[in-house]
Length: 255
Length: 352
Image (tube, rainbow over all chains, first blue to last red; front, side, top):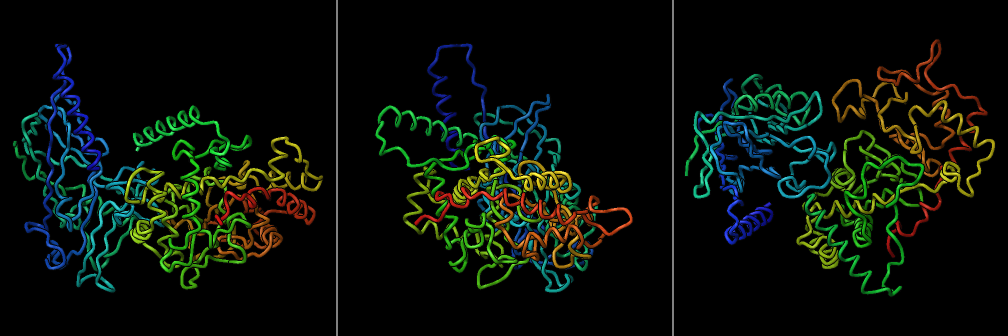
């Protein structure tokens, strides 16, 4: 992924250089810029801390989190006139345990004012069955079901005294076939802000991702009856919660 | 990925041109071609086209080494080839169910591996959905190879020979899972079985004469078994309950993947190619002989909620009505599906 970005940068440099050398006034390279995306993981109002943080759901059940990973993919930006920027090879695996994954850059975004942001929580169905992948989609990342091939879109593991049996929480949300498709595409509001892409600016979108919202929303999750899901109808309940408001644009930095 | 492929194809093309223009030395030319790269005239279009992973000698041989390498298992003594033996069409001789690390037994019969290019789903329940990612299932299954992908890559990257061979094929280091899986697929995609006596008959080739009994058997098969064991591959690739048990508590089959109650007890309809070589039969290897299989269909089936409707017969127990003569003819025909060339192809054997 990084290598590819590097190549893109090189290519764009070459393009820029080339353009600079020509006298042809008709050739105009559309200006492009970058957009940084940063995600913050919260549980309600407090930052997520793996293992040691203790949290309480809206129904009063306590829990801790040992693993929190998810895919954020197929990112799109839309201008007010409807034109879209679609990030190529747009697959980002975000892991709470790896700070480097919580910020990434969209390169070569055409300059302009973007008023909407859309992305998928998960991995599109095509890539679930496309054979051996690399980068964020490398099955070695531990986000791929080997016995029922397909990606785990969100992996939350932890524990809760209210959970049955061994008190473990195991929420592996995935699946792309009806009726248990858990791919969710969301367009969290920019709250009136615009993302201004310019050649000389480095704007940042800050996303706030609330773990609690996996367990509340359209479906209230009770750990005493649901503490373990690996795809299937219970995963759909969690995915519907995620789509309903787990991702919020906290703010947009202009520069 | 597409871009990489294009680059690789372009490079391969260049290399081809260079080789063509610079040398005509017969010694330099490969002794043999990668098998299974062509579509037999009587086969449909493959699911896994050669363009998805263009066969090369180096990548194929790398996949071959990997397929027979027991280091892919946690204990270092189970390779893919341990449970998939060429002389029985890559099934596992004399094993009802798979036999993995630490002598652990699985719950299902290791199926024959053949004509995998034509498959869109793998395993008895269809859980694996691409030839390239399929090996992840047995590698990580705790009662089969019980290894992690990370460990496999660690072992491969610690091996100088693999390092060098992978770099030669893929032009980058370190060895990653995509290279591993693509290389394995180079080998497994080459398992084309298309030289049985039936194939010669079907393609009107020399040697393709079937006896009167075999021809009658073919007719019975097309008429009474052909709705599931359909076409030239002798499977419609669906999942069906063929009346083995009244309940499926031990193994729910397709329902394990879909979670749907209507899929309980359904298992993949296997191809009949090389079937005479691949006892025991059924997903749990319960039948030792083809005769027992035919007797099951004729008179041994039991009713259950998801039993395939095609077996239901008005006024009598479920099954397929088969006379003793028809069984004999079917047995004769099934033996014409044996492909000796395939099971003796040295290119598919463990390199010595």
